[in-house]
Image 1: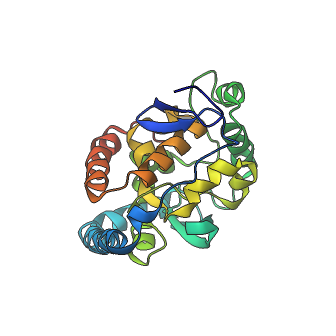
Image 2 (image 1 turned 60 degrees about the vertical axis):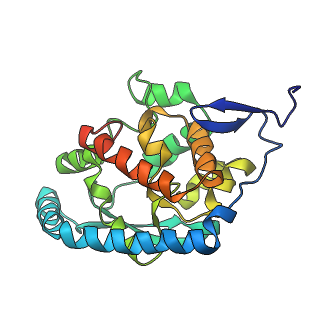
Length: 244
């Protein structure tokens, strides 16, 4: 088949468009109807069970956060969910209270726009797509980020339907100011706690590659794929691979 503006290539287990101005919209039909109902039931049962089982861990982390620095235990931020709907997103606070988000805004713009040199320069020459040395982060916060324990409060987001166990990560509103039109396709489904990006590189994957993985997930969703991603997430979290 001849290459064209919409020609597809296989990369990192995802389908990628060579020229994104001519993109193919994602197919969300797999996540509708019975499939969507089953996924939601798994979310409720899974998140509910984990909240109960991990309640002692929540208590310990809350005490550690409270002792680490002044401020609330939870970090609450507006994120964008399915079809761009805003919702309150919860994490254990890993930064000093009332920290300026200018550092993240600048880095996010470079990351999304594919400025690899800029990202590398901000990380001391390392090929990472997250801020490695963030002066806003507390000591306990750094450990929680590395192990992803700061993300546990999102189980509540899952329980009330703002998020799902597996899906694209929810963006901050200012991040989508840098999106290309095809990037917005990832917002057509409910955002998740984990996804293909988390198990296939995390901070070592570029933004375009992350979006390709998200779109591949949406187009090929199945309950078996969700189970596989959750199982692959566990060793990634235990090793702290790519987390910061």
